[in-house]
Image (cartoon, rainbow over all chains, first blue to last red; front, side, top):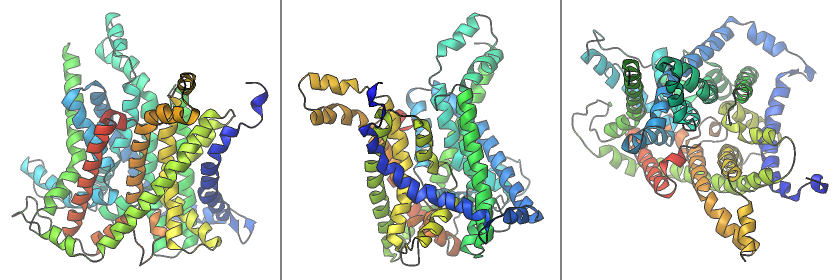
Amino acid sequence: MNASRRLDPVLLLALPAVLYLAIVYGVPLMMLLGRSILVGGVPSLAPFIGFLSDPFSWTVIGNTLRIAVLVTLVCLLIGYPTALALARASGLAQALILVAIILPLSVGVVVKAFAWQIVLRRDGVVSQLMTGLGLWSEPQRLLFTEAGLVIGAANVFVPFMILPIYSVLKLVDPRLGEAAATLGASPLYRFFKVALPLSLPGIVTGIAFVFSMAASMYVIPNLLIGDRFQTLATLTGRSFLFMRNEQLGSTTAVVLLVLTVAVVVGSAALSKRLGGAS
Amino acid sequence: MTAIERIASAVVWTLAAFTVVFLLTPLVVTVLVSFGSSAVFTLPAPSWSLRWYQALGRSRELWPVVATSVQLAALSTAIALGLGTLCAIGLLRGQFRGRDGIVTFLVSPLMLPGLVIGIAMLESFRAAGLRDVWLSLILAHVVITLPYVVRTVYAALSLFDFTLIDAARTLGLSYPKAVLKVLVPSLAPAFLTSGMFAFLASMDNYPISIFFTDAWTKTLPIQMLQYVEESPDPTIAAISALLILLAAAVLVVGDRLVGLRRMADL
């Protein structure tokens, strides 16, 4: 920490990767942002004002946010208990939960979305199960509905909720709970005052991951709900790939980018304030 | 245990069991459909057969696409392992401010929408006059694989005690030998896990690849989505089942070499 403050030669090792990403990824993103606020070489917010004054855009933004929020809620609801169980489990149960998380992570999203197409059909497993249990009076199709999309997307993204929560929970000393119990805290009080606050940084990270991924998913809505339901991501993809409307595509791409960057940056700051390691 | 604790514990385990079944459902369904004889995905299948695997073996379109995807994934993972490891060492050993910011930037492609990254790259590559499909794909896929390597190797290195290398040198090893005997073995799990996930992420990528493929050079997810949209039959399930088998094999190897618990430390 004295004279060698200038430039550490070890730092040069980081240069190739940083330069690479800056040129191939950073600069193109900046250019995309730049172009989106330049109309004929003059800075202008006209494309955004145009986009936001179209009621259809608000349907698309509403769809994006609603699906992302629902998927995040489902993932939190089933992901938190799973992370808790994983942190407490040992032996076979632990191995089973770990395999159930890591194996699907290693299988592509096209494969999983295609499988959900089969499961959610009118004659699919879910429909058979629900009518068999007497919960549905007749077979129903969940494919091409919002409920089907939420189920399929939650299935793909729930590992990204479980893993950050688990990585925080496994560091929590189990004796903390015992100590609280010795001091007379009730189980519910212990959960809300000890376990939950300690796992908050993991929850925040998980929510940010799942929300930003669910807001930007493209393949899953394509296969599970179809063209009539548009989100910012599917509209961006369609504008570029099918409609050749690159102006609209750039605008929606930037709106989506701003949304996800806000979520990621906001959650990182929040998680740091909550005392998270990440 | 009080009654509340018992109920809470039962709820936790029930939900966890549900999640395990939920997570494995698509994989089990895919494998079952691939062995069914019916062409319309009936479950349970009327009878079992290997006809979709035979159809797969006869397919002329598929295997070149698989070869493209594997080559692309292997090459981009290798480049990412090289660049990413050097980068992690440089960032961790160098004395400077703003290290967190740089790490966030390097990992950010994982968190931003792939489609937006793809569009940004497409426009820039066009502007730079880059038309070669293979080169574009490689450049793009290194952006996909590099964050996995940087994140995992950086995390592993920050737990590594660099004085161990000095200790090994005091005990008479040369510097390269000390690195080889002390640093490399303790980084091996990070290499393996990050390489594995980087490879699979490249194999699986759709939203970035779609902008750089053409009619002659396609990657596997793009070809598969095209099949699903145009002519869905259980041949797709057969390819998918093989991919699931590949993932399971990778997982078994990973478990042997690293351990499942460490693989979960993403």
